[in-house]
Length: 387
Image 1: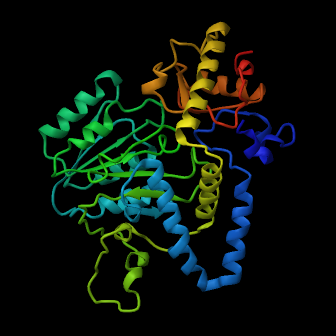
Image 2 (image 1 turned 60 degrees about the horizontal axis):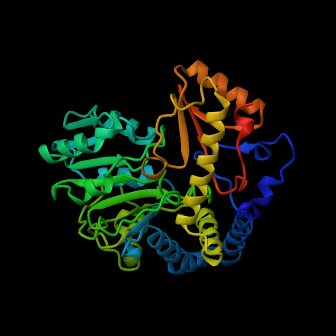
Image 3 (image 1 turned 180 degrees about the horizontal axis):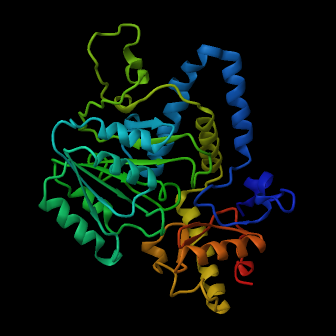
């Protein structure tokens, strides 16, 4: 059904990574064929227009990207969607708006992605920074425990993932928690493993949270094009700021550092816009063919159910219900399964066995991850995973 969009990968020579059953799609998604023409168009525009390319990029391409993201997430104001090459740059720009000479208290979980986790460890070396990490397990009580701490104590910043990167488990009721957040707390949601995978409606929290994600995972446009929605009431003044942030007044630059009341408040500096062209090509393709996030999610849910049926019949020593971290497909899962293999050695050995059967997976220590995508066959049973 959807495989026709990925012929350049699915028709790759035997033995190449692209010729395998690609179940690491939560790490690197295949790029639809339209992205090749998009990259070439970016080259042509850059080569032929030279410095004049900035006009079409900022007046047409970026607004089109912002509008597509806003439609996908049901955000009311596309002009409040900041862009950058990666989410870490955007998140650190938020952090840089706090006065680190004063106490900074941050609430998060123990399951955040490496970039943010590492950044917090570095910040904790400063005497005025205090980080509280809520254990993500047991997931059943995470929402209650996280919100109790958020409401009880004075936090300047809260940060949590909508879908945890290591397990694929959805943070229960995270948007509801964000909607009830204290006014004193800035709230950032890492939505990377939810964006363009699970249907997400941010309309109720658009004025409450910063939501970050990007094009590298489920959109399939490659690395280098990330975004962050900015609450309408935001008046933060990032210390980390670049020349893009004053695009509106370059010709009449003032001596003071001002900030626009839109996405440029969190803008950085020069970046490569080929992933912008790729992302727009995919958005245009899917909109033209009526492919929505709901349809993508339903397709993946069906694939996951077929996988579980095959798994239950296989009686595999590691890939089984007991080791699967979460079973709730409808409400509790992203687009990949994670199996706790007990030890890193067992996970590594299983990953090598899968590769020998032409199945590409990935792992995080003892956790082996298997992802699902619309470029998997409509009737794929995943039998080669188990035999």
